Length: 276
Length: 276
Image 1: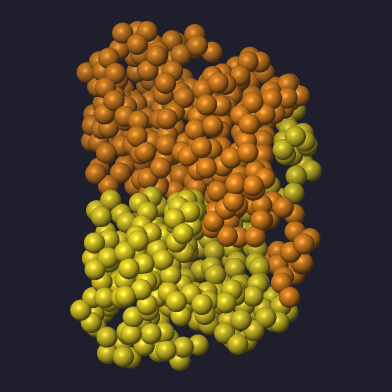
Image 2: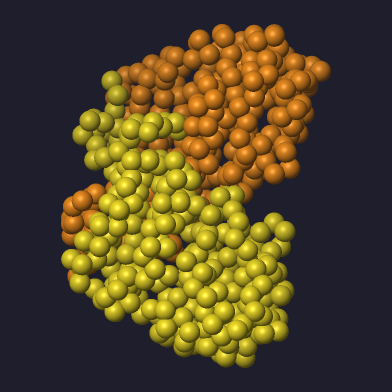
């Protein structure tokens, strides 16, 4: 006899909702995206779909036509009728008995939510506080996977310190990125951000930040900095899909740029606005 | 309007099965155990419950009385009436809208399955083949968490090479452990296995292997070896709850101990049997 149990209830495995046998929960065996719209138009949709396709390929989830994903997202977005929407979606490899190995004929599970994107104007105007946390993540952070426990623990640690984001510091003492954002510093009129590799997500917001920097002739250096560098930086900010650029005015308790968003950061915010 | 979508169906978030909003799938925000019974008796139950409690504490999932977990496992095990059972269970932090941060008042989700443990006698008699894979896992492998995508990808890679287990090799070129097992080598009449740290799971089977080694006066050296060391080892084996000790007779294609289980490995298997 083979049985399953949910909380205190013993049930037959045949009666289980497929979501209870999702490889997403057993292994975090899936990938996701978060996209947003500005005033009724999805921002950088193709970029997000391309990254999603890359993530699917990297974890070898097949049987997913990216055009089907596009049409599902569009259909949900249109039905939701939210001009400034946050759209989350993930695909897991499928549901079935728990087994590390998989076959290519599994039916992937698609899940999506549409919500109003939280208003970020206060954070953008006042700036936010961040705190550092050891980067405990795996070595394939270029894949936007559902293995996010390190991010959860770091973000919770930050919240308990009264901070809005955790900034990961790797074993070499270098900043990689935020728990759910890309990280940027302006030092001597140059923009620093971590180079793309398996250590960071290829952030779409980062791509547009670099474009904005180019537009205002701000030199970009793709190089990780240390927390000490960050504490003495002229300006700091994070980049995240749901809020684009958010100034950082406190780093591990140290006030940055006089506790107010820096002027170059504000120019980048204005420049970014043109893309949206 | 706030909506959700499952595959092609748009639904109200209020109608979603809680498993679809489980932090287990959004973040892998949960921990698990696999235990087994031998002839009607659960093996090392207290050890597994203690490790489970440690994992829960490490990821800060509260509101879980470990004695309740014990009674649930016992009740399911007794009802299943499987003498040689494999019992899997996990607890996630709970279900709710996707948000990295959490509160202590969330209701954790418990899920368990009982199955017949697969017969390992053929593998134990003939030995298995293993292949190496880069250790992409996070830095808190001492926590038995649901973030297992690196393990899935490594195990799949091994399966496609005709191997039964993947052996992780870290960035220093050292073997940590298997994708779902502890790893052991016998070199010059000494037993080598990785020392406990954040790089490996504190394997319960490992604990009993070391006890078995002590019983047969086999010296233990807790030190990681390289794949080259492994290829030239006298004997190799893995330790895993569902099969205890399984000899390794092929390592990345190189035959080990003449392609047959080694004599010290067989003595350890016999010694381990006394514990069960």
